[in-house]
Length: 444
Ligand code: GDP
Image 1 (spheres, protein in one colour):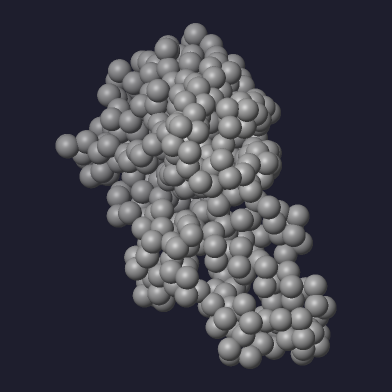
Image 2 (cartoon, rainbow, N blue to C red):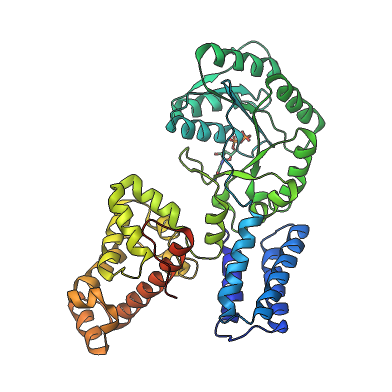
């Protein structure tokens, strides 16, 4: 996701690299380039305008302060403004004082509501909750059956009208579902509602009636990220029609541009809370604006990566690695160990996509497979311990020896060493920003 924007922005920053001081002409050019990048990513025009105005104002401040290394200053500003436009802080679910907490899902047909109901239920169950799914989408043929299937996959109960009772009343089902949850002590109720293919008065009225009947703590607007600009109009219609206090973006896996993600918060004033990234129930995550911004800027998504690592490894092992990444003591030895850890964690392309600098390495990543890891391992294993600790000493003759020893070419050895230095540089700057355990201020 966000590939186009990432590529464009990294081009913008490359143009700034090596500049000693920023001039007004540089700021103008940079703002123009960022503007084009955002428009190409299908970000809504008012959002682009607001964003550029902020960047311009702050970049002018960089001129005034005559700061050295303006490229880094601009990257920092763009990062902070991306975080802001994506919603700033991560917004958590609000739970009712007296359970059950009612979460109502609203959105167009095909947005991914029913799938999301299952994902959310599985996620909540993993946190020790006892969610109940309520099938109030009586519009779409099969919606009830589909909810029952995802409920079964998630291992949670589903409240649905008896089959064969005619069309049924979705408002009555929703109300009965909440009553059922109270009796059976479910602490969360997720109400799946009907959508239509387009915004439609009947659908909106039905959503309003369900809302009034069950008084949800959370109304989540489910939005298909792939619809691009149309997302904004749909979001406005739902905001004005039924109202919502959180957004869930679905199909982010298929969205190369990111326009909906970058526009929806600004346009509706409501935060994105979750992201859905595939058809499987596990393809779901809390939406973190800061992590998303880092990803857009090609800085990788170290926190998510580390969280995933923690699920697979002992916490102290992952923490030790994080601390090494944070300092500058990360060596090729650690690099090798990390690769071996990653290899155990499965789908390699997806994981490497989270590593810092992945944006620029995309083409290379498309071809990464386990054999590459084996080759990398062979190269590192052909190095002496001193070389692994301090790769700076690897001169031309050492490179030739390492290439011979590992059955690879000198340029493969060069590529690996360069990649390592690049990764280490990114890691220490990312770590400093996020304050990993044991992080020291980076010395860049
Ligand atoms: P609803 O009409 O809003 O309930 O939408 P559904 O839950 O039935 O989803 C519509 C289609 O989108 C289904 O084929 C889902 O498998 C698919 N889908 C839902 N979420 C995602 C996602 O995050 N990524 C992808 N690729 N497909 C999704």
